Image (cartoon, rainbow, N blue to C red; front, side, top):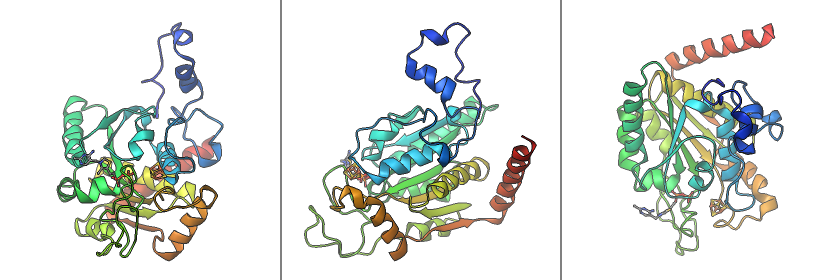
Length: 290
Ligand SMILES: Cc1ncc(C[n+]2csc(CCOP(=O)(O)OP(=O)(O)O)c2C)c(N)n1
Ligand code: SF4
């Protein structure tokens, strides 16, 4: 991470809005931040209009924390709850049409490689389960099988939260919701399995019960996508409104879910593992030097 991109000309800083000044002085640029630093520095995303206690907003905050180079990162999202918070973060955001995210990201990443051959840009698709596996399924699959060099992060709340509780391909079999009153007939789609079939270099399934782990998985997925091609993180981000989870129970629900059917999984190809080991070794050595 570097301050070079966001540093204003000398003398100009004090004329900028205080929010921007805080971002330059106390932001994530130039320093790697940890979960234990949260609340003590100017985060990339602070304000959002999501429901109180929504686990998705926590998950997004953690992904922001995991960005290896926020000043050279572009998010692609779409309709759905997550975009309410992502679009307000201090990272460029492209609002793709519902279903188009992975096609847009493929073009964007390729275009950026041509336009900025000297400066790698990280492209990340982050949106809901409905947006990715229902109407966006075709674009998602093609980007994976073509090994396009960007990360896809699914905010899996197992429902269409933003439109009032319709079932998605990721809803569990039998689940009854406001707009699925008879219960879902089919099984939850196995997107981790499909990611394996597409031979992605990094695949992870994670619940925000362990915040440091979410930060680490997001970071690893982004670093590996840069080098080798598509990576996938599937995060359980409960919808307390549509699943009627009382706000104080949101984290308990996450722990229960993790135990029941959403255990942590991480699949890394050999070449990606060697690459990560190298990076993590260098980081450790640099830390020791300090
Ligand atoms: C082409 C198109 N079809 C339908 C919609 C309406 N729509 C907006 S958000 C949404 C569901 C979002 O569900 P999901 O992607 O799971 O995200 P969540 O809100 O649960 O985070 C739908 C169907 C739309 N915006 N565009
Ligand atoms: S509707 Fe559900 S997913 Fe959307 S902001 Fe509210 S709690 Fe979060």
